Amino acid sequence: MHSEQKYTDLDLIVVGAGMVGLTAALAVQQYGFKVLVIDGREDDFFALAENMSRSCSDLENIDSYDNRVSALTCASENILDNLNVWSKIAALRLSSYRHMQVWDGEGSGSVHFSGAQVQQQRLGHIVENKIALAALLSTAKECQLPIMGAAKVVAMSEPDNGLRQLTCRMSSDSGPTTESVFSARLIVGADGAMSKIRQLAAIPLWQWDYGHHAIVATVSTEREHQSTAWQRFTNDGPLAFLPLANRHLCSIVWSTSVAHASSLMAMDEQQFCSALTREFEQRLGTVTKVCQRAVFPLRQRHAKHYVQQGLALIGDACHTIHPLAGQGVNLGLLDAAVLAETLDRGRQRGQSIGSEALLKQFQRARHLDNLKMSAAMQAFKWLFDPQPAPLIIARNLGMNLLDKTQPLKQHVMQQAMGLSGELPQLARQKLAQ
Image 1 (cartoon, rainbow, N blue to C red):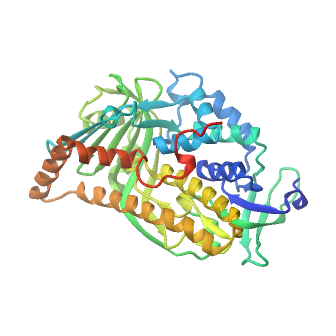
Image 2: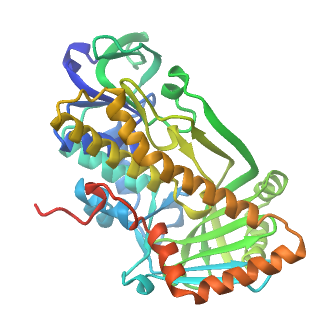
Image 3: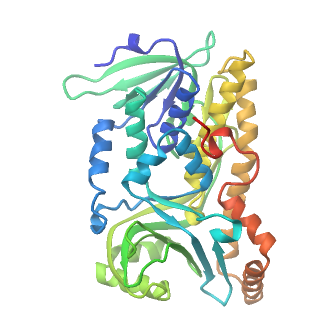
């Protein structure tokens, strides 16, 4: 089916054709590197993109919405815009949110964020994961980015003569499973939280279980969402309503205890709608319909290091965080942009792109930022866990104080929008053509 000869002299192999892996591959290809993407799923990725695109023309049909969404920051929008992906997302379906309303379900504390407070038209966009993926795949097709599905990584060699080899088990409909070997100067693990590349490289993790499950679903509400992302902190975990392209539809992320999640998943639609309406304090009136409920466990993970000679981890392969701020994929897209820029800079200085010294520059640029976001999510999670009365009072006072302190609020928003700190070139406003 695929001859190894076709893929010789590769600079990089990106393992994982998800949002972060495809972004990284398109970015390094734009910088002139020769790259191959491999993925274990047996999908025809380009046909998949067309199917996903077709399903989103009907804004009214709640069943056409993906229950997994991302709150993409301005920095992420710039990265995707510079790779010619954003216009395709905009042509399919997205929802900009101009406001964010956060409140404490156990008291009177609340904070209102607005794009206008930082001279921006919006705080970010809610984009369904399938739409981001369809747009990335469509751009990959235009750029003739080679993507190979049904290639399951089973082994990885140590670096030898500046190359690493990946052994893949190739499955095909027409014949027996075969093994193929590919080699490149750099292997990029973008293969998710259970990363096979991370396991093969024996990179250790810090990890802990939040003791929470997250329920995701698309819901319809009596009142319009007002281009606002809503978040209520409850005794049992945060509940977010994220605005979708249809003004009466939201994507929810409900983080709660394992037992409560299990009982919510067992409810019929009407019972679940009632429970959700109550928990959300009817901010958008009654929840009238829910579809595509899914549940998954929440774990925090952080790789102790991201790189070895000839190897780099990005995205969920090296860090997963609580979804309460929807920041996970934004961190991964920044990883991809910083890695591409670091490799380009290294090549200009005559360094090998597999050199550990060069890859450590990428690690230094991302490790602290990712850890800071990880720690912030952990602190938020702890702060809104069941607490003694004095702490609840202090928490509410703190939220109200933040709401009134403009400079601090602006700083928090700049951070959340990905507009602060040292940004890679790709994460800045679209470059002049």
